Length: 610
Image (cartoon, rainbow, N blue to C red; front, side):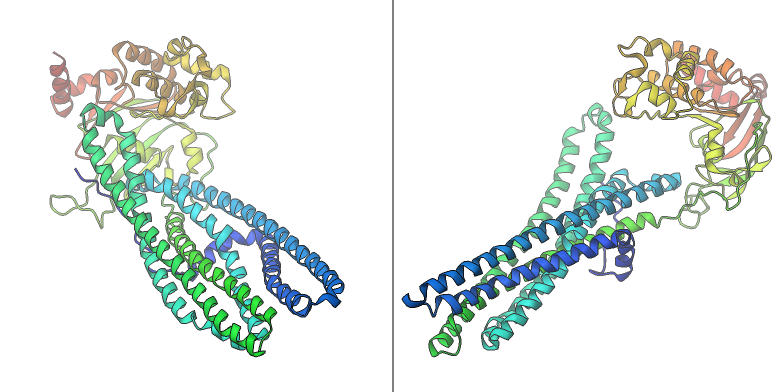
């Protein structure tokens, strides 16, 4: 079985002015620090430029004309010049150290701001976005892609100013000292340009290949580690490992291709630099012999020539960093530009008091974009709910049952406003839920899902979910109501027991009981919604939950969704959904007597138990 991945589009351009402007928006708050960093970098570049000129002065003024009669004076001059050179080196070192520290600080601040912005935006996105986007891809966006931007800020964009300034400065000084010697060095530049351009084009493709294959590995690992139980249960380790080996080998090949490109470029530029220096030495040596140039000028020119090619190599490397940042920024901003489809209204309805009346009015809902995804039959939209209408009075306990895919969970999703219907309205106390602030609406909803998610932390933290409003006494009372206190208090550290990721180490039933306690501890004022919540507990635990729920749901509106019909026999009313429509409605006894869909479900379930 091969893995299929929904790839992000590959970046088409190496430079995108729109993306650069958006990136600068995150750097702008630290503009003064960046400006200081650029000034320090230019100062360090000036210090680098001063070295060969000091060599020239030392040779031409103190060494070349030196003789026994002038040895004392020359020695004093060299001593003073050496002191100046040491001062220049110290100034350059200090400037580079301060510049590096400042840009690292800016990079860390920008990364923190960008990651906070991304996580805050992800929290506002609807469930439909997460249902179609692999978790591994999102983790890559918040981690690896943001790191690529940090590298651009700390060692890319600002460093380019220093490289360009150094190259221009070297060219200007060499032309000023001796333009003939300068042209001898610059003769190899056309070849350097061809080599650099070839490297630039190949590095862009190599980077794309590496990043694409890394994203595939991240997505595959996230899926496989999450589903490790299934892999081991069905003895699929070898097949899964072979699939990973293919992805890993593809990433290795792409990385080696990029490495080959780098390994060819740097020696080529170094060779061309050495060739330019050799030409300079041959031609400049002749100039010195003929008296057209001094020895100090030749030595300084050789020093400048050797330093001239370093910025060229750095600029090519900076291009690779810039290309990485452009690709990463495009993916980051694609996440940030994801529209918030479930948002609060401009003028939300105030939530002073909620009674708990619920109404669905001709609700049509699909998880897919109806214009893109079509059902197999008739080419119509794959509706999860089709014209569903019902009312639930405040304090009433209602069960929703039906075959898998009948639309039961969709009712929960719409009521909690994880999604909005395409047609019709969902009302709470006569007000469309789209008129409420989401936080206020969900504050009244206690939700227990079949797939319980527990966070790393203590049991008490998982029950209160970090809410300071829930006291320790309320946590314990909720656990006692659901029967969770019995196994929690038997643990060595009780409520302070640290849970591992997703509650590893607890049974499914224990995790379900903690989820119930979490819902009760929040004291939902109106709604307690249970989504197949007792499907993972044994008969004894289910009996405990049923007794606790009888007391806990008193005075609250309750919707119970369960495949196990024994858990819904004593609710006030049962709604039967079939293929997205409300097919039947009534009490348990009335629906059995009717002999319809509910009666068939009941007979099938209990026939399986016989």
